[in-house]
Length: 241
Image (tube, rainbow, N blue to C red):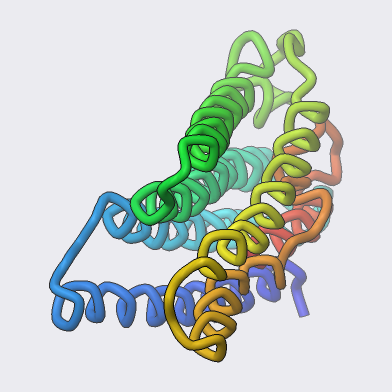
């Protein structure tokens, strides 16, 4: 099977499952809890960006993502690379929104000043590094088009984003570990049955199940004649988020 098709199938399956769970959460917040906070709005936007990411991957696959460069026309290869850039933009922003959603939720329930400072630090750094990576992604070359259409658009490479993308991957993994461990610190002090404490903290710690390194290899798009093929394994990594 075309590896691009494998990516598309995996992404639509994961997106469908994720959106279904997001809808259930939103229904619970609106109809049962009857409270919608900032974290819920961010969570909804995370789902929107996930859907946009998957649509972009589908378009990239249609244009040749996953097939050999030598079987594609220049238009198709250029479009495939361009749409992986678009997809990665949605993925980077969506990943950041997911972290911010968890951060703002925890800010609403923690009481200690030191804990609040730590959460704000994570929020600011995640927002800043994600925004910087998106800007770097689209400004790697002069002119910009040279990064996805190098054979017809001569240009110069200005930025090497690999260190930044790997760094963001490590930071993202660290945040996942933090959000998996942090709930146990304050939930254990609550006045509630021990069993309920364990269930609540465990549920909030499920994010650690998909922690991996590096988390953003998909952002490391290099100028080679095999990008449409090699980008596939990167997008498969991304579908795990």
